[in-house]
Image (tube, rainbow, N blue to C red):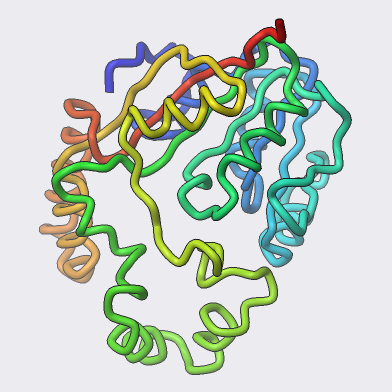
Length: 258
């Protein structure tokens, strides 16, 4: 990761660290699309005194966020391509590790462009397409559905599996759109093309990691072995600092209309 980290940044070498650097300190309103419970949005209170708004399709996450952070505006939405906000309502928008879950990506970005002010900042993070992309455990359920079902039911329950992966009320398979059915990985040219076509100009690309899908998967299955887990955590931290491939970060701005 090459982005210079300011002393007040509470994060190190991850998507929140990158987003923190690009969210303007002097902003009248910021939107976090796919905010989940609103943890990152709440942290932004330490940087800006402007209006902080989060939206998510998960009713459960929104309810938890509203209880945890009642001073934030956390709103349940039903579809990505139609937001309940006026044109040019926000100075900045974050969409962190969300775009890869969405089927209507261009429509979503066009809608975010609509509610963003001219010259406003858009911060996007997605999985990067690289050598170890095939190790993404988010696609395990699609590659090996029977094995995934067996493992999930063993770890949780058949009822929980049914709710989360078969009849999810939020129109998802786990956390991925039922129409997408894949945890997508992006190259820099693909993400740039998508942003350019929806009215944005790229300011900067960055990223973290190269071996982190390898070490992360090993760490997941060895989490019971604490010494190995700690050693792998240190390797992952070093990997995130030195490389820029596993996770792709992008800062862009809304182009002025001509």
